[in-house]
Image 1 (cartoon, rainbow over the protein chains, first blue to last red):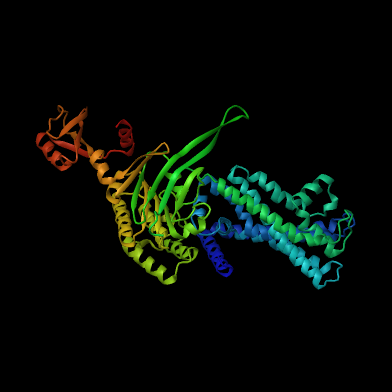
Image 2 (cartoon, rainbow over the protein chains, first blue to last red):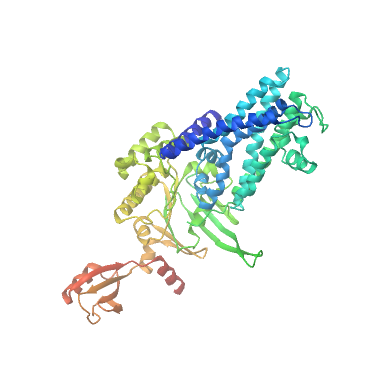
Length: 269
Length: 319
C-alpha cells in the first residue's frame, strides 16, 4: 500500500464512520455538544490547578504546565487515532473481527478508521491550549534544536502511546475481558505522566517512567528543552534515545498484535 | 495459477483449547479437535458443496481457507498462497460471504458499501462501474440501493452481500450458509446468480450449507464433513443415486383413515388423520402419489419432507 492512496482510503473509511454516526443525529449532536462543554471546563480547571501548584522539586508552575502539555498532547493524538483499538475486544467477542481479516488491508488500519470517534478530539483541544500557553510563557530561548526536539517529542510520544494501546488491545485475543486491566496501563500511565517523574517514589519511577517507558514522552524532553532542575541526574544527551525507545516500543507492540491475530480463535457462526 | 488446484488441504487439523470451570479457581484445559485431518482439493472453476451438521467443522475449515484462523497442523494452499501468512494478498483474490454476518456498512446505504469496497480493493474504476451496473441488473438491486443496510430484508441484504463479495472479480468465492433463512424466491435468486458467476466468469465456488437443495441445484461435487473428518467426497449425481432419492410425503386427511395401500410408497408413520408416506423419487413422483391419494380420501393438507443433512450423515455411518 503506498501512503498517499492509503491516506485517501483512511479518509473515506473515516467519512463512512462519521456518516454512520450521523444516522443517529440527536445522539451525535448531543455527544459533540457535551464533549465541547467538558473540553472548555477541563481547560479552565487545568489553569486553576496550575495557579495553585507550588514548585515541584525545583520545577516552576510554567515548567510543569509545559510538561503537562507534552504528556497530554501526544496522548490526545494517540487517543484520537489509535485508542479505537481497544474496541478489538468487542469485535473479538462478537466474532466481527473476521470481517477485518477478510479485507486486503492491515487490521490495525481498519479498526483505527472504523471505530474512529470525533468526540475524542475534545480531549486534545484543552491540552493544545495549555501547550500553546506554556510554550509562550516558559523561560526558554527557542532555537532550531529546541523546536526540533519538541516536534520529535510530540510525534514520538504519540507513537509510544499508540503502541501502548495496541499492545494492551492485543491482550484481548487471549482474554476478552481484559479491557479494564489494559486501561490501567494506558490511562493510568498517562495520568501519572502529567507530573515530573522525580516527585514519585522509586518503584513508580522505575515501572511507569523507564519500564513502560513514559519518561521518554514528556519528562526527558521537557527537562532537556527547559534545561530544568535535574534531581534524578539523567545524562544530558538522553533525548537522543527517544527515537530509539520509540521504535523499540513500536516493534514490540506490533509483535504482540501479530501474535494476537495468529492466536485469534473467531467464534462459531 | 490456473493449472494448479484453487484450494489444497493436506491433512489439515485445527484444535481449540477450551477451558472449563472446575472449582473456585481451578480450570480444566480441554482440547477440542474441530477439524481432524481433512484433505481435499478444489480445482479452478469447480463449484463444490461442503456439507455437514452443526458443529461438524465446516465454518472452521472455511475460516482456515480464508486466512482468519491458523491451522494447528497440515499444509494449506489457496490460489497458490499460504492463507494466514499471505492473508492480505489472498484477500484481493477471494470473495467471502458469511450468511449470518454482514460484510456491509450497516448504517449506510447499500451503494455506499460498494463505493467503499471499490477503494478498499483498489479496483480499476471502469471495471468497478461495469461490475456494479451488471450486478444491480442481475440481482435486481435497483430499488433498495439507497436504503441503509440495516433496513433491508434478509433476502435483499444477501443479494447485497453477494455483490460486495464479487465486485473485485475474485477468482475464488467462499460462501458460508449463503441461503440460510431465505425465502424461496430469494434462494432461487441467489442460486441462479451463483450459477451464472461460475459459468460465465469461471469463478471457483466453495459453499457450505445445510440445505441439500443448494447442493443439488448448484454443485457437481459435494463433500460431507462430520466430527472434523471428511465422510464423503463424491459427485452429486452419484450421491443422489445412492442416498438422496428417498422423500417423505406428509398427508393429513379430512378424517381418520386406515393406512393407505399404494404401489410405490409405504406408510412409515400414522398419527390420527396424518400419515407419513415414504417413497423413492427415482421410482415415482410426489405429484403422482398425491393424485392417487386424492382419489382415495379427502385431503386437508400436504407437505413433503426433504431429508435433513443430519439424517443423511446418520445414513452414511450405517452404510
